Length: 168
Ligand code: GDP
Ligand code: MG
Image (cartoon, rainbow, N blue to C red; front, side, top):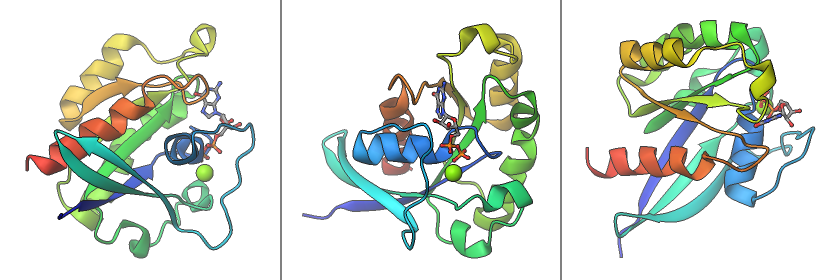
């Protein structure tokens, strides 16, 4: 049976929880300081979406985003994208439009979802619900909220992207 394989890139400022999200989705684990496994570009997991088996390859960075030094190889051939920011980090929210542009420059228009992570830290939230929705609309991306820590919403992010890719 034919199986769909999707390369998914996860971009956003450092420390918003990108590596943790990949680890959570692919391994079902969460740690306070996740270090990228040396020599591994991506982790993968297969899920069933709309009756189809879909293999998701989630590409991680080794922290190059902190220096704006993500290479073209990271983006090459990506089918879908997660734009991630942290609810507790204003700069990470403000940086989202420029991350969207970088992905567009390398990949063109691909299914993309905007993700607000760390929703467990409600009392430290510095991004209002309205402005988050507005940004999602302006960028043409669905806004989803996650707590990678509490394992809330992570599956929805990847189901949404896989479904979008299936029905393109
Ligand atoms: P990256 O630089 O974007 O890859 O971010 P990391 O995955 O390394 O996460 C940065 C820090 O945020 C780590 O200490 C994580 O444990 C923490 N973190 C990630 N997701 C969450 C979350 O949903 N809630 C909370 N409270 N912390 C999180
Ligand atoms: Mg990381």
